[in-house]
Image 1 (cartoon, rainbow, N blue to C red):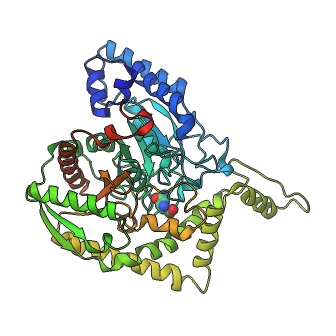
Image 2 (tube, rainbow, N blue to C red; image 1 turned 180 degrees about the vertical axis):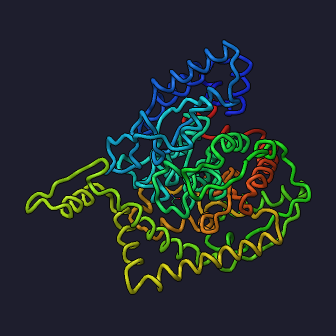
Image 3 (tube, protein in one colour; image 1 turned 120 degrees about the vertical axis):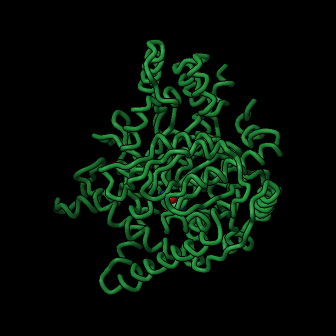
Length: 503
Ligand code: GLN
């Protein structure tokens, strides 16, 4: 029974719960048992929320027994990236500086999960303050890719993607500043969505780079992400960048599976040279399937995407240097006193930040402080903002020719743990294809596109849509998922050697 439960999608669990074929306690317990069985190897979770998850599940069961109206996902458990603040559980952001810290308030997305009565299984591992592409920059040890425990699960949200692909949770929340939902989804064979900027409230997501950050869903199917997206989205007065939009029709679009007449634009600059052969092969295969299903494939050029990574590594660290100033040894978490000398506030801050932050976080704070400093501001930050405008214009021109754009999500499959951790530039290159969406605020999704020929590891296919048109992502991705699964004879993760896979 446990096996059957953990291999069900969120949509299937919701149906079985509604039909009273399963209880929410059974469903939640099955996932907690799976976590207990495999998370010693995977290290997806930093905290497991056993008691609270089971008590929410029990509430769902008694509400259902009393005939109360319940949300469709009531009783479907979820894991949450540990960058999102939660009452009753620690929030660490993957950093020593927040070890043992408990938020006094819930993020807006958490309030929404609670309102829907979705049991929260726990908090998932991440690169410290979401900075990285491998989860190796976590202060609490790396997460491992369930497809091959010697490989990275992507980052920064490797914990959420690994939890979902190891069948520890049917759903998870991530955050995506430059690709941290989509790239982990890509390398673990799961689905990850970065919604339109402002579509999901950022209130309670510990800020990395506020003009780029977005919370979004992680799941094993396109439909499941759409269902979760509908739960967490919507206007929030606590987030001044939140849009006045109602996000309906996402799940219906995901289920429609129809791309007939849809114009799909291949971004010339986001495939080919620099992309692993097996990634390119699976990408071309997806294009053929879409074409055969009646989509019109066009080629678009976004010449300024070449500068996206460079501009991102000025804008993002600039915002990081400002956002992380609040970790001062006074207000949150860790406080370290200087070993000798006077106890001034500056010296306590210095000692706390020196001990509490890891190397990658320090690197970015220093880079950002430099980029923003007097005399350099216009040359660095100012130029990067101009590049950002050019990227937005590239998107506008591309979306005049195509309804959605398509590319591989990441240039390679999952690399080995340790392979790039000491080479920041090699690490940064993982996000070449995901960063443009954050720079322009447009939505993106990554879905499994098959296994690379060379290494048998998952390849991700990314769709991008114009801002506010998230519904198009679900339509295109839902259709491609259906076409691919027909070809494979089932979901990709059913083929996973993942800790026993679907067996
Ligand atoms: N990997 C990218 C970085 O290191 C993206 C991070 C993210 O999206 N949070 O900045």
